[in-house]
Image (tube, rainbow, N blue to C red; front, side, top):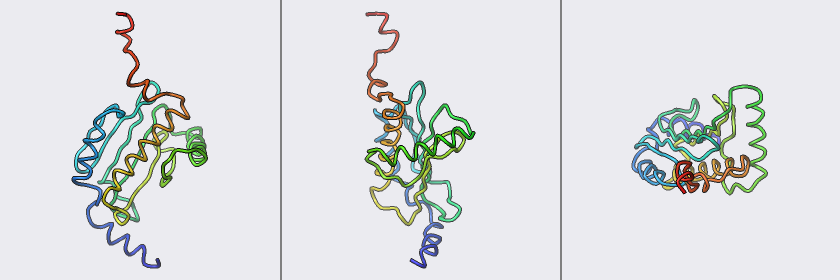
Length: 172
C-alpha cells in the first residue's frame, strides 16, 4: 500500500484504459430509450436523460486528466436549472446525504458538487479499470440520474417517453 501512488502515477501516464471498443459499444447501447439522446466515439460518451422540462447530461470523458492519478475516466452528470451559488452548493450536500440514505442500488464513488451548476462528479483512474467496468460505471450513473428525477423530482421517465404529444391530444 505504501507504493500505491507510484503505481497510480505509472499507470496514469499510459492512455486511458476506458477508451476504445468498449466505449464504442457503450455508445451504441445508450442510443436507445430510456436515453433521450446519446452520441460518442472511442474516447467518450454524451447522453441525455429525462428531467422535468429539460434533460440531464452525462459525460464520460477519457481525455480529461486527474492532477494526481493521471489518465482514466472522468464522469460528470450535470443537472439543469442550477447556478454556482451557495444554495446550489447546499443542495449538492443535501443530495449526497439523500442518496446515501436511500436505495439507489448503485455505488457512491463520487459526489454531488456545485460545478458550473449542480453535478455528480467522479474519476476512475486507469489502475482500477477492468473489462466490463465501463458498462457498470455508466449504468450506475444512469441509475443515479433516474433516482434524482423520479424520487427527488417526482418526474417519471416512462411518462417522458410515452405521454401523448400535445398535437396528438388535439386530434383525438
